Image (cartoon, rainbow, N blue to C red):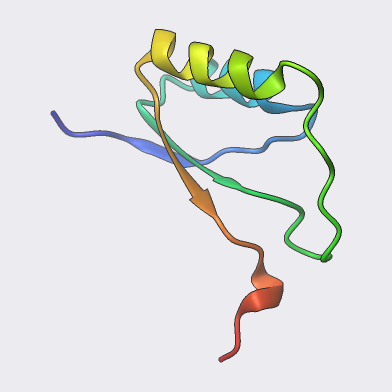
Length: 74
């Protein structure tokens, strides 16, 4: 099965990302693992990872993590 998706914002948390992906009809999504403009990493809220994994499975959504641009050594 082919997957179709795009870079999907995680603004508002992973639950909001899943809602956006669902509204857009995505079967795949790419997300940044942290802000792409700074080194600081915000911790996930309690239960957010479990909720994300359950939601991803329920939507049959394939998610690819994208590292921040700061590590680009080119």
